[in-house]
Image (tube, rainbow, N blue to C red; front, side, top):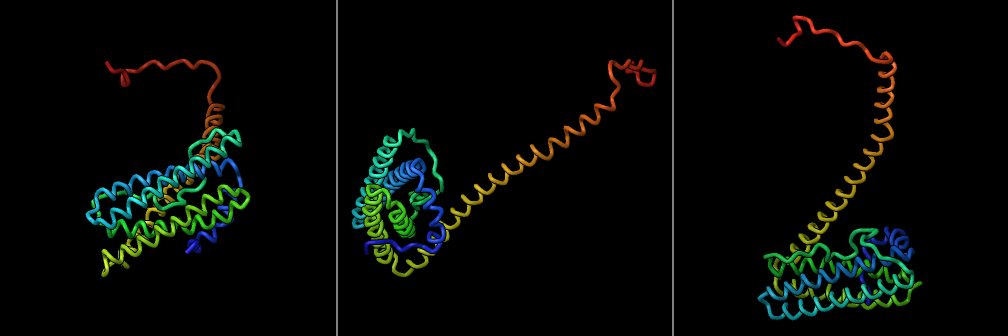
Length: 244
């Protein structure tokens, strides 16, 4: 299998992906963001290799982690090369969140079943996304070659996690995959809800600045016109109002 299955949502978002990668500066930031995700994911999978009691999974996790760390090096080098060519001082940030499910990876006390299910779902999504990126960056053969190389690794990761999940959890592997997909969708929803909340908050601040504040300023000027000019004599306190 040489390519990943492209999800329908990714096909729908193809114009957005094309817009992101069409700009060289955004391309640099995207590559450097991928480098961080791949490197962090490789470290997490290394921890999984240390904790699993299964010798076969230990070897496969180690090979997987080495691949992810290598991907991080490839993305970082290519991003740095493009940055030098563009005389671009790269900044952190990512035009769109995600691009690789390993940014959600967290090694806990969960068993190999949960980890394999999560890795399978994440690698399947990454393979489809990288297949789109490989097509979009046709104007950049070196970056395209990187995606082509990494895509082959992602397909291998997707396949081995599927087979091993069926081996270690023959009765519940479908349920584990379903739970991993639901968990991934929930995390995406939380990120989207957070971004939407920030956008709504910014919109409300703009509305307050341009609608509410001018109203208060007009009311203040109106009240000011009713006040007499100059100093006003203070009234003497009476016996009823005197504190003594």
